[in-house]
Length: 402
Figure 1 (tube, rainbow, N blue to C red):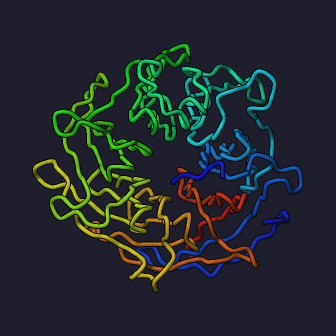
Figure 2: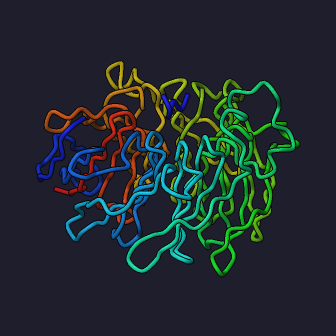
């Protein structure tokens, strides 16, 4: 499934890429700024990059590396050129929790970064120290990888935090809580963020009762724009659990969507979810069915199946292992890719939420866009960062309206 355990020069140039699509504002083109590659020109921390986070002011980029077991920091200049700055690795002195580093979230409060470690079952904190970052602490039950992944003995009560197989991490808009999806614990973990920057365990949610007894092995989380809905993807059970979220952070199960129920099709191994600005539409990348599945919020407040987009609409291939999505701020464009596929794909979203395929980008200057593990739009929607997992690369584009 994730296969984080188990190309080479640095490029800096600017060119127009053959990737354009007509939209309400004209023609969009991607202008390549940079390709960074692990181990080239001093760049480190791009061995199987899993998640990319860009600060709101576009001053820094944070990257987690599943194979380097690392968290890397890049400085960004006014032209959005990235320069390698720092790296933290599990092999470094007194640093742990980064084995299979996957999710990353930034907390403005205390200028902190938190990283999930899939194999370490951990949440690791880093904080700003003058012009650089420093390791702060690791939150973990301390269970060894072999005990969790290779032992026939149940973990049981040893799993007190619910962080085993920690994958995705997101924060609430008010930065009062941090939420973590943990695959092996089959849980969503809620942490409270205290005013002094401390992150304190609140509770682990391990079911969707009374509707379902399980969350289906969570791997991806999303919040609505008002933070009043939490969306949880269950990879193994082909499941989407939707919680109503109250002002104090209380979570109540609202709906469970499963493959093959109520007309839902090709919803196999959902791995990434993005939400339209008003929460009316949900877009889910499903790696098991090589598809993007669309849901619409009805007047009842519940979501219904609308559409499945798969390889048949794009020439027969490309979305294999669909696992990466990004949505524009206005909800009109969706970028998608499959980690077992080839290319970056652009879709337009209609007022009914339905997706229409617009264009694809397969390569840039003899560098194929394959094994894409992450797609990240900057908050101003001016730049796009594309990470290639086993390609050990980070492609940086400027989005231009012509």
